[in-house]
Image (cartoon, rainbow, N blue to C red; front, top):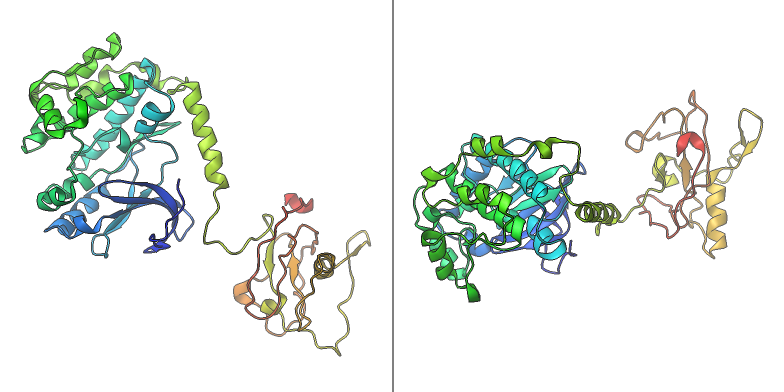
Length: 430
């Protein structure tokens, strides 16, 4: 993931953007967080494509159908807005690299059992897509995500919405679909059926098994490549012999000669359904490392750090009115063993003085309370007249596990994240 650029927005609708996942001919894909904290992928469509005639209507229709696609082998479409200044679609975030990255950049061609596992997962994904009345039309390695549980297909429905935008695509140099993975009937502009996705599946499997396209030309000439797809047989010399029959059948020129998705699934080796991993060990290791990096990724818009789990930090004035100078001091709290418990506000003041800082000028004190078993009130229902928290059946527990610098005072004062890690606490596992 790359950091957000200066021209990138901070939000798309209710989704807060965290970074860039990629950019292509259709637009930019961002990693984002939903209002409920879910990780999602948000794709914004380029302005040139959004301005194409009839695009927004088709985009709205196709994304509405895509939201009906279910199953475990696709990235579910969560929301979309075809009427936004830049149309966008949000899908579940799949934590893993694309098949393009795994084969071309990280590992190289996959072994036979991984290719068969890939074929099995993609057949199931296409089954979910076809069951919703859709044809993917742009199945390619960069639209296949590799995860520990199997492959997941993304971007279904968007390519179909782009089909009628030929003039806009020509003017911007964008090609509908990917020439090396498009079926002959798609290149000829004919009506497409599920068999078109089977052809694309064969091209994807050939790439996964050999690291090469089954149809290639020198110099990357698109028209020459399309001619080979329509008129010449595929080059499968780099594909292991045990996989050639399967892939060659998918790449038949006539859609009627290709096996159905159900027939392909029935022919797959049962090894994929065993307990053994479907990916090579080094790929699995890379997936684990990427998952750790994702957990360590910081939200660029976060300004508050709440310390350790189970403790919430509030400013004193946001919960209680300041104690007047003529009021008696708060009584010292003692636990069940009779040991004195120092107020956390005093510990906080001591840490501030150790850093050469002072507390708020109005004399208010920041307090952290831990409750057992549960707090009797929350920041939304703060007491307006009490100068100390109301009693509970549980025992107030205090701990020094607050972060240095996580002290603030005054109404509405923002809390600042500290620099040091929180100390562990023994209070109920915090």
